Amino acid sequence: YMDAKGKYQEALAIFANEKHPQQRIAEIDGLLQSMADKDAAYQAAITKADAYYDQSEWEMSKTAYQDALEIKAEEGYPKTRIADIEAKLAAIAAQKAQYDALIASADELFAAETYVDSKAKYQEALTILSNETYPVEQIAKIDALLKEMADQEALYAQLIQSADATLLEKN
Image (cartoon, rainbow, N blue to C red; front, side, top):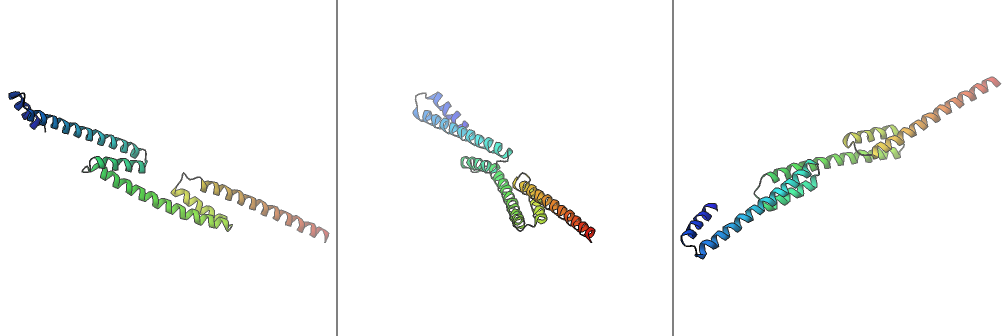
């Protein structure tokens, strides 16, 4: 466009009142401005998408990269990033499904009062999604229940031993 604009300016220098070179120069200036605006909008979308990406905000980042592709569909960078994000989201979904399955199993074991096995499932779930609080809370409940059960068993054994000793003394 710059070469054409230069030639139109040369033509205008020869015949300053001619409308055709003036119109074409204005048209080229409009096209150049449109291209600059498009580039600026694309760069703004990429900057926004990259910022979300760096913060692991996958859905927001993907949307911003898609916005960039709407501006410049031929660009490869946003396509590559979207594919990368989709792979990350699939991995996260798989982890979540595995976590959910472990929690469901742990909850069933907890309801059946199989506390040791339940605790193991909650601990395994924590290895997948370590920031979740529910398994931590359930493990604390189980530990409290197991301690209470151990205390009751110890008290029971002590009472039986005492009763047996008392019974032997009476005989």
